[in-house]
Image (cartoon, rainbow, N blue to C red):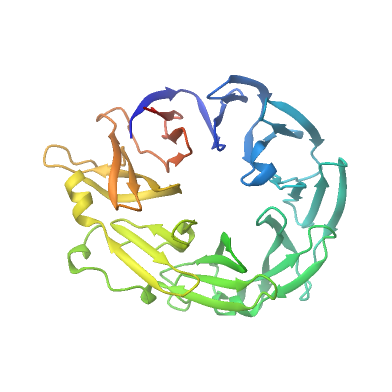
Length: 382
């Protein structure tokens, strides 16, 4: 893997990869395409569609409006929507935009792109009288993520919503009863992915609270909302003895699992290895990468993103001559061969604080640092 490197100054914390391109927002609000330069559009943030038709569109969010922009075959503003009160960033779906309000009215809006009209507007109230926030999950499935205030503390309830009507299909509360917190702490759920008819959700909580159960991944049935299976850290094989004692543990973070369509497994790159879950069999595994990382002086690994055959991550560079206290190195771990195919060390003093999580597509690897610089590595094809 060979790359050319480029650095963009004055970047706003808004950059996203499409399948073929890299889009980023400068401080003055201009949206740039790495391939085509100035797009002619402005925005404070972006939301790029991920699948199907939606993967050719992105949302540019301005102060008073949203622009839906097609970037294939050329950049064209498809529509512009004025923001209503407390609009959140839209979710880009195949047939429309899913928008939620961010105020206490908990309204949801579905905007039909073809007919350029709001298909439905609803204020969601669940069976216990509480309101929820709207999130998207897949191109045609939309969810209310519910936070209920109960006497014994905070608890989540999840409901599936029909995208055509906005009506509730089912509601699930029992899956999350164990995570009700008696204190001020609020547990957090993360959407992971859809695996066939299984909805994968990750729970992260206050790990210092002994009254809460361990962090886990829960699989719910898409059609009924019932719990199918659940995995906690204790369900994985014991770590190799040589891994213990490094960097305070292995870093089991359920929200960081990613779906690999080739192996048909959920994978998480931890500090020194790879966790894996086979949702079809329920089998779990942990693979140590300590020897490989020590050979490359690249550990611990953190902030990983999965694209194709590689986990892209940031790391310290730890050698006898150079012992970093910050994350100023990048690497690409091949999940098929379990080898480091590429790594890059920023010179000491070039990155004063640390690099953030890298992202990748077919042509680029991109990451930013705390000095508002975007670092772009363009792949060289032979």
